[in-house]
Structures are given as structure tokens and as C-alpha cells.
Image 1 (spheres, rainbow, N blue to C red):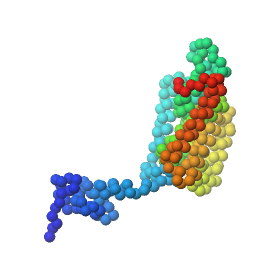
Image 2: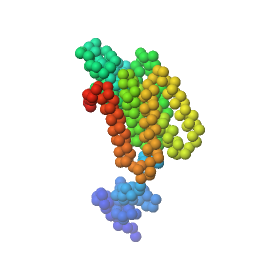
Image 3: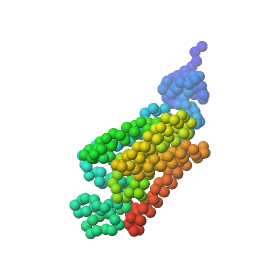
Image 4: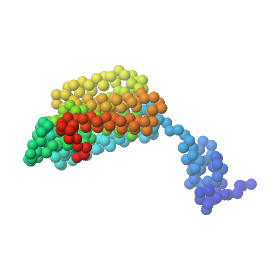
Length: 309
């Protein structure tokens, strides 16, 4: 004897003979979700997903099924787009590079600032409240007519591509992006503290931060450190060699920031590897950066601290 047809609990006009094996409600083909035994309805599937704890890496990030390093792609695209903007509007470099303090004259040229203002010359840079330079400078690169030119961008993007994919896969997208930006700011802050009268550009500080993170991650996971140590030694050697023609302060600041942030993510007690605690740690680090900038600005300007440009 054939069972009588019943109406789907979500679509009353649809007659069906199938029931959810969990709640026994009648379900039509649109509401069926295949299960190990029989079929489940939409509500039972959602309830089951809520009750399953999401897998996370040892660094607190969610384990994603996505294989594409999306954040790395986006960061590379931003750097390239900004560089194209530099080609069209070269003045972007002077406007957004990491610059601690300089005097802009009536002719538009920038001159060294030695603590005194001169009639007709305006204070320019982070000391004048242009704090955005701490971030924007990390997305700029040397213009095509410079000695290093476009290779500055190419080298940084090559390093970002190779290191960023591995780090993003371990930290997860949100933590990876936070690490990148914190390392970039950390490099810019050290430039401001040590060499406030120099103008610097480049993603190198952030890349050095990722290199340090790569080393810490492998140390935490207990992998073979021989190759990783050689990789890190190469980065440190490059930092020493390039100090003659690049901003070693930006490199060192990014390296130390990346190591500090990743060490906190990797070796904190398990109960502290949650996003609210990690977010709080990032805010504290930003606060320390802000204090350092304020102190340096007070030193440069004699107490006239500008918090916005």
C-alpha cells in the first residue's frame, strides 16, 4: 500500500513523500539536504552547523576551505594601482610619503626643518599632524625616473607574493591583514623616530614584518628550521647591505613589529588566542605607536603637537 502524500512544511502546495530523518517534517526536493542517512530539512542543517565548533589554526584564525590568498592579491593590486597613480601624478609621492618634518617653501619645494619656522615656509609631515603618512607611505614606491625605479615595486611585490601566501594561509585573512598593516606602521614609526627629516616610500617594512612572521610561524609549528633560518639570514643580510641606499629604519621597524605580533599570536596561552583578546593587543600596540609619535613630535616642535592634518 502506497503512503499518502503530504505537503512540504515550507511549500504547502508541493506534495511529497519524503520526510526529514531528524525532525520528521515533510520536505520537497528544494528543501532536501542530503545527509549520511536519508535527507535533512533546511532548519535541521542550520542547527547542526551552529552546534559544530569551527576549526581554527594554532594562531586563532579560522580554517578556511578557500585556497586563494585573497588578501595578498588585494595588497599587491593596491600597490600596483598606487604606482600607476604615481606615474600619472608624480606629486603623490611628496604628498603621501613617510615624512617626519620638513619645510615647504613658496616654490613648493621641501627644505630641512631644524625646529624653527620661517615666514613663508610651512611645516609639512607627520609633525604637522599628517599621521596618515605612517600608512600611505607603505603603498608608495620609487617613481620610474628614480635610480632604482620600477624594480623597487617589482622586488617588493615578488617578496610579498612568495611570503604572503604562506603567512596568510596560517594566520587567516583578518589576522594577516592586521599583521601587514601593523608592520607597515611600525616601520614608519621607527623612521619618524630616528630619521624624521627623510622621505621614505615602499612596502619593505611590511614585507620584513611578514618575513619575521614566517620565521615565528615555522618555529611554533615545529618544522625543519634549517631552511627557514637560511631564509631569515638572507633577509637580515639584505637589510645590512641595503642600509646604504634604503631606509634600514623602515626595514628594522617592520621586522621587529612583525616578530612581536606573530609571537603573541603563536605563543600566547590557548585561552588568549581569541579575536577579542588579539584585537585588544593590536589596539594596545597602536596606542604605543601613537605615544611614540606624540613624544617625537613634541621634541621636534617644542610642544606644539598636531593630532590631525
